[in-house]
Amino acid sequence: MDFSEAYKCTGPAPAHSPDGRCVACVVDYRLVIRDAETLQVLQLYSCIDKVEHIEWSCDSAYVLCGLFKRATVQVWSVDQPEFTCTIAEGPAGVREARWGPDGRHVITCADFNLRLAVWNLRTKEFVHIPSPKTGASGVAFSPDGRYMAVPERRACKDYVRLYACGSWELLGRFSVDTTDLAGLAISPDGAYIACWDSELQYKVVVLALNGSHVATFEAYHEGLGVRAGCATWSPSGHVLAAGSYDDTLRMLSNVTWRPLAELDHPGLVDGPMNCVVYEEAVEAGPEGERSRFEVRGLPAEIPSRPVPDESPEAPRGVSRVAFSPCGRWVASTSATMPRALWVWDTHGMALTAVLVLAAAVTDVAWSGGDVAQLAITSGGPRVYLWSQHGASCVHVPLGGLKATQVSWSPNNASFVLAGASSFCCAYLAPDDEDQG
Image (cartoon, rainbow, N blue to C red; front, top):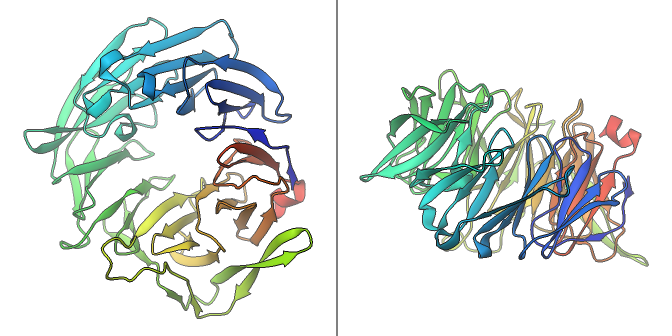
């Protein structure tokens, strides 16, 4: 594996363009566009204030910059440097901004979720959508980009509003049997809308796209429910994964809407027999620390946080769920055991591997391609790789770079490692890609 030099970045993590040609990063109030292969600067744009969020349009033509303290969003064109677009919301404020599915509409959310605004870059027209419950990040689009689902709270009841993208016409308002709707996601086949209740209650409600009720699933009636950010569809849409505070990842079938499997995260791993537990061993040397993975025998104890279980402040539950693009694998973490990463095989719904790091997992990212690879960071000078062929620790030879975030390039041949004030690119050798 080869590494680029370290380059300065602040604020949001650097991001590859969807076509894989460029990398966008931020240095204070400047947006820097670099070539993905050479990392040479292609464009440099000066924003009016510190940039807190960046996002590429789906066709890689534009980059959105969120300047939320200024209640402003600026949009820049990669191919037309003279193009400028500034969206200023004034007293209403801007707390979130994102692209619409066509890459020519920007969606902003005002402070306190007062409204969404959809801005057309071509015509400079805008449409207001009142009172979204969860802001711009809680909005879901159908895979074909035709529909937008928006959670709503009205008269102490939860609803989902469905809009037509483009005209932004309201197509319907559907009641949802939740106590406090926390999030929703449209299935990859566009057939269903999965809605889940707040963390105070375990309830998943599934609607058809026309608003008709399909199913309700409640794993239990007492106790904390689905954890925020831990409900996601598999790439095929055949499985809805829901991670909850009881340290269980439930894999719901899209046929019966009942669990195909309940994947627990025990403190003692005793099977299956083909499961491999890797533990990082750190050694001090003349050139600094080096680490490697050692394979532990079963049963293997997984280290947990040194906080008494009875403490109300103790972190609990599944804290991260990530499917590989092929859908074969799913990675998860538990807040109770933050140094461990669990990899499951969805074909057999069984545990394949557990990686125990020297520090807490901070980020994970799957590559695509024939052999899915999982890249993991833990806030140190190392990146960890796992594939079905094995696991490895890779030292990052760049001095002060402590990697906390990782993201793959669209061509799966490299990935970006980002720390608090710098980033680099790591390039896989052909042998790395073939063998994982």
